[in-house]
Amino acid sequence: MAFGLATRITLALVVILAAGVAMMTLLSAQMYERTLSDFLNSRFEFELNDLRQRIESQADLGIELPDLQGVPEELDEYLHADEQILSIEVFDENGVVLFSTDPSFVGDLVTEEWVSAWRTSLNQDVWSNLERDARVVGVPLRDNLGREVGSLALRYSRDFFDDSVTEQSTRLLLVGALVVVGMIPLSVVGAMTLLRGLRGELRDLRESIEDVSDRRPDGDALARTRAGYPELAAFAGAALTAHDDIDAAIGEIRRLDEEEAV
Image (cartoon, rainbow, N blue to C red; front, side, top):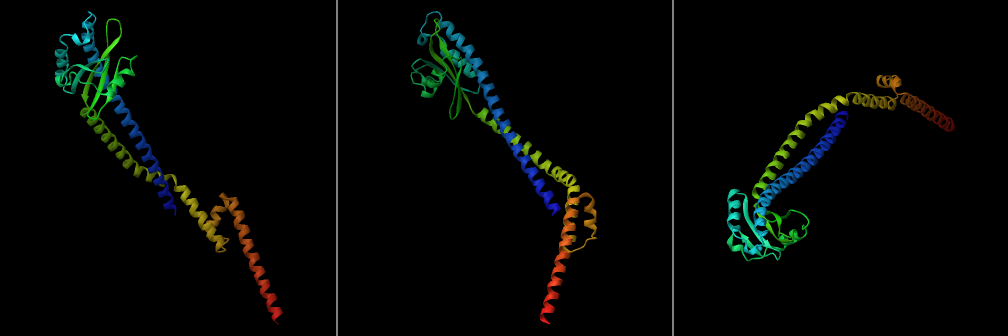
């Protein structure tokens, strides 16, 4: 029974530890994902801001956005400088693609999600969107009067992001599993050590109750626990006295029955 108690306490400690490690692993994975996302967005936002300055410097001369020269070449230059970039588009306030690294996109409408993300962040310098196979970062384009006349959008592959998050999550799970496995023997040893005194006391208490039940007032276990547990000693004395009284009452009843029978 004592070993069973230690085992149950050890199991409870392991379950609590495993739950804590699992929670920390989940939080760490989410923090890594958020940090990596912010890092990548900041990185591509920096590149977009540099490209935006080039485009807006031409717009400051009074040239309309669709009439800007050299924009496709500049977009291609940034596209080939980073293999993670899938495409770069410039679209106007109506969502029509004016320039793109993929000429087939020119004249098409961007998705409603892009337009919505751009319009809901008009007072900010960056917007973002998440697609099935890509992440999108965009910055607004303004004319020389400060009016937003369109936006510059960059799509980059999710493969690097997803692979990095998966790899880090797997690493965290492995570390967490090793921690839990390593703590199991320590929990067993710790529980056995901490409960050694309690196990002895419980054994003495159990044997003391057996002494009382078997009417052994001079039992070794009962003698050991009398000094440390006066309540138990009082209970044992009362129980033994009650046993004697019951025996005396039974003997008296039998005597009366015998006399009545005679």
